[in-house]
Image 1 (cartoon, rainbow, N blue to C red):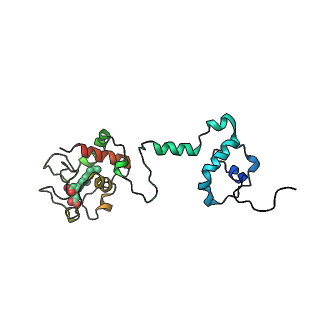
Image 2: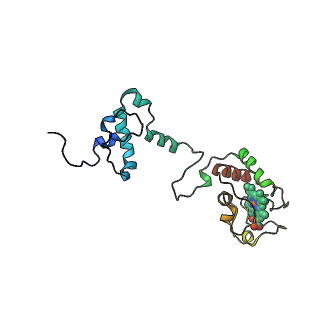
Amino acid sequence: MGLPQREVPLSMPDFVGYDPLGCGRNKLFRGHTTMKRNFLMGAAALASLATLSACGGNKAEQAPAPAATETAAAAAPAATPEPAAGEKLEYASFTTDVAAGEKVFALCRSCHVLDDGVNRVGPSLYNVVGRASGSVAGFSYSDANKNSGVTWSEDVLFEYLKDPKGFMPGTKMAFPGIKDDQDRANLVAYLASTKK
Ligand code: HEC
């Protein structure tokens, strides 16, 4: 008799041969893994089930199932959310730390103060959250900033401060931006907390 001489697509041995937990007990099926690449993601959940049963006993229970880990990560109020490619990263999705944000503001102090009407290299950031761009009296803005038409909401600041020149081409704010999303969110929360 023997095995049927035809390609069986995605039979159990194929799944078991995929060994995401590395328990290595299913060597029997190694080499039968002819699973196509595009099946890999969809098959991952099934594969982990198959692998759990393949590992058997306590070892399997101790092994972290990938599916469970993903669920936990999604459920936790993620400190560093990772949106899918192309999805916009929202300020609101962060849990912010105002005290940490105050430390980040050290990056701004060389050019900005928070006192009302006090302009340095940059305009006063007094009540900046909710303020119209280019509206501080006595500060000589670039046209780009003055005419941008933006309102400095938390969301806009969060985006702007990542890459000021990218967000506002022509701005004379000589600052490369804060790439770390959590640091930037904390800073924006701090700025919001200074609002009077
Ligand atoms: C090297 C100096 C410098 C640093 C550092 C700097 N800025 Fe600025 N900033 C400026 C200047 C100059 C402008 C005015 C830009 C223009 O007119 O084009 C400005 C403008 C701004 C504006 C627009 C204000 C308005 O009234 O429209 C905001 C908001 C701002 N900065 C926030 C920050 C924050 C927050 C930081 C720290 C992360 C920071 N800046 C760091 C120089 C700086």
